[in-house]
Image (cartoon, rainbow, N blue to C red; front, side, top):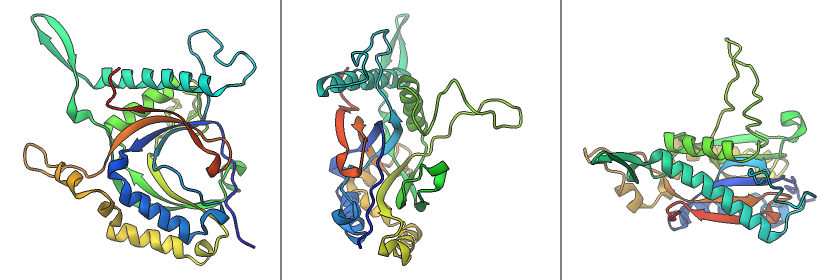
Length: 279
């Protein structure tokens, strides 16, 4: 009997997606892993490369109105409209906080800062077993090969803005009701661990149980093979004015809202907002 990844995800998710024009080699790697771990028959359906900012959140109006008609139901058009509205608010706030403020004849003006472009910078590849028993039974029942991303100030800022705009999600909780975990008894911020999953392999799939996926991930990490997935042109653009090499990564292209209710093949986009769009 073929093992199958059948975990049912929940709610809406906010993603940061890399530029598709730069991601073809990473997508090819994801397809290779999908095939090696059973393909569609094993519940290995394709998904867009992404860094999750929020998982299992919801939509709200935040303007005193009940956007869903009061019964909790959302039609397609309402989801798109509300999703666009909330994402645009996040992007507008991000642009506001990252703009350079200049003074001209006593007037303060904000100018876009090109150095604040969001990048998804891989720092390592990591093998993460996530059995069904993990997190009090909330585990996905799979093993994940993923890329750990650098928590750049820009990425952290966007995450904070999105978390404060959307209702609490499953990973980061309510910002007004945090656990008191530090030595001073003060509430700590939920930690943001940016990453991009490459595969959700069933925990009892052959290439998981025989150790292949773990060894393959470790080899990729040892040789830093994921750096080869970044286009050479993109690497050339990381030289700064002083001639020093900058961090290599993919440009983030879209801030998006997805329905992640159900299995992988049931996910679908609600709205995608180009990060360079004019507001």
